[in-house]
Image (tube, rainbow, N blue to C red; front, side, top):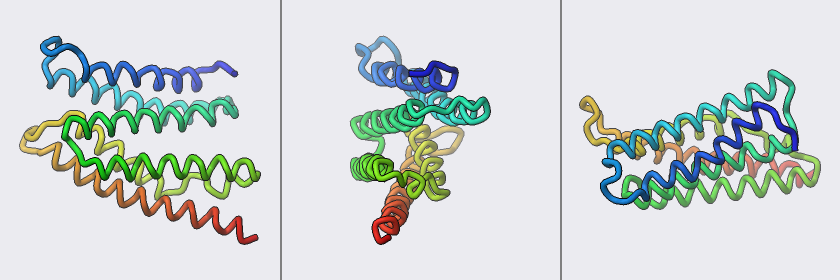
Length: 188
């Protein structure tokens, strides 16, 4: 396993997951809920930024590796899945959104793995629709983690759930897009 700054940043994201989770399970009274919300949102934002940054550095410094290509999406999917499960358990979003997003991630990960075994990984490479889905999803999760109904006259919970709905639609759309790309490979 190679060690470099991009892989270190990816491992940092993985290690932030239990820290992020433990915040919501601290004994009652250790921290007030708003401190927990903001701390969790900051941790999630740091994870989202390092997700972009580790890929950028790996490409720029030519430090890409098979291990990094494996670990990076795993770290992303774990962080998103944990955040969604926490948000559902806190009653801040709907379980259907979590089911759609987590189900799609499992499906597309399995599809990518299968296509890689066939030597056709590029046929399910990340598309623009997937990037829009990720942007809506990450923004929604961040707003829902903060969880304020009145933030300078702005309802973050409502806005977060609207974005979560948009992310869910884009999630389904992108899943069908990737399945269609893979299907073309099977027809040859």
